[in-house]
Length: 408
Image 1 (cartoon, rainbow, N blue to C red):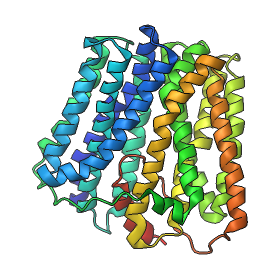
Image 2: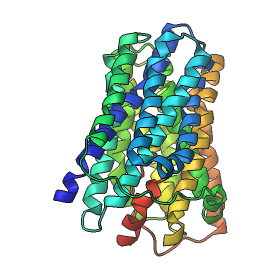
Image 3: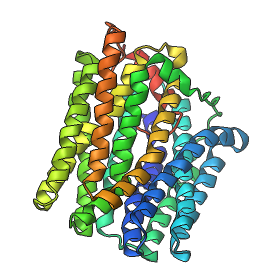
């Protein structure tokens, strides 16, 4: 129990960080619309976030090794705070894109520090409870961050100041803790080819998950305004997506542990295509229909990353798990960097339903590739357990490695 209590500062930091950086994406989209940014420029902001996320994930372990966990966390938090506060000082879409690189850097860097700290402190007797708590805190914070949009006025210094205050507040739990910061773990090598060599389908699956999630979360506010939702309705629209993903994790996990995971991915993608068509076709049926379609869309697309990761780990041994997790995160970041900008361009040219047409085509490609792979490689009898995998940092594999092997 005492050891679990030592994780409270880390979980509190995660919550404050999610409330701050999780809210800036939809707030930027709504603010950009209020300031007459083009749809393509708003999409660029979402893509810029994942550029910062990628470089932050790569740099953070090295920075921790040079200056320690707490100083690295403080440096990344300051970068995120500056990026938030500078928004209303310079009203320019391309300047905002640079600011979003800074907030993406903050997210990746801070999560890397927190996960490295958790990894160093976890013992086998508390690992399951600690990881369950961590995933619950992360998902709850994400859900609340989307709901915050209902009370944050777009293009307002006060709104960005509130997010900056929350980002600064994330510093307090770690800087005030009396517990000694752990030694720095060695950073994983980034070998994207490892994921493709072990499971090409998993690599393609995480790209499809990135396209779905990044496009919806970053450009969802633009879609919502295009179909006539108010600001508070857009907040519930985005929250419904996250909630649907959270509710689907357990039943999908049961299916992924019982049946061939390639068929689970295939049926999830078929459901995602149906959900995309449903969401695009309900935009004239009122707010309730749009909310329910977002819930279904989240339920069908959110678990795809975790199913893909579980399928990849079926073919890995213990020594490969950390690098494999980093490689899968690399593919996710690549897809997430492109998706918001491309979705915004399609909406500008073809209307709001074009974003879901893009997502449906990506999942159709995943289905075709999955069917091809099933003809090439037989299924495995012995598999790793399904785990919900947060897309937080390249070090998430360290937290899940022993958790997977302990439950085989």
